[in-house]
Image (tube, rainbow, N blue to C red; front, side, top):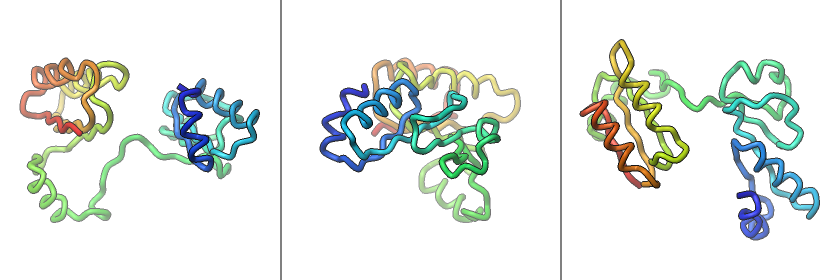
Length: 171
C-alpha cells in the first residue's frame, strides 16, 4: 500500500498522510527520508500502539489512556472515534428538526458509522451484533458509505438482527 502512494506523493509533495497502520507509516517514513520529501505522517492510534512514535509527525490518540504520558507533547492529541453531540453545540430544537428532515428516530440515541460497507475490515458485523445484544434501550444504527466486497452480508445481518432500527445509505 505504501509504495502505491508514491505517485500521489510526488504529485502532491506537501500532502498529509493519515494512517492507523504502523507498518505503512514506517515504510513511508523511510521513503520520505531516502528521497528527501516533505509530506507529513499522522498516526491514528486506535489500535493502540505504544511509545515510541518516532516515525509519525503527529499522533491522534483515540482513547485517553494512550495519551496520558504525552499530555504535554504538542505532537499528541486526543480525538476519539465517537462522541456525543451535546445540547450546547446543537440545541434540542435543531436536533429534532434535523432528525425529522433525515427521517431518523426522534428520541432514540443514534450510532453513526461512516466508511466502506463490507465484510473485509471495518467489522460492521461486530457493531451490529453489539447493538443487537444491548440489554437496555438499543440505539438506532445509521451506516453510511460505499458498497464494498461483502456488503450484502452486512445488510442482511443488519436487517435480521436490528430490523427497522438500522439504515444504510450508500455513497
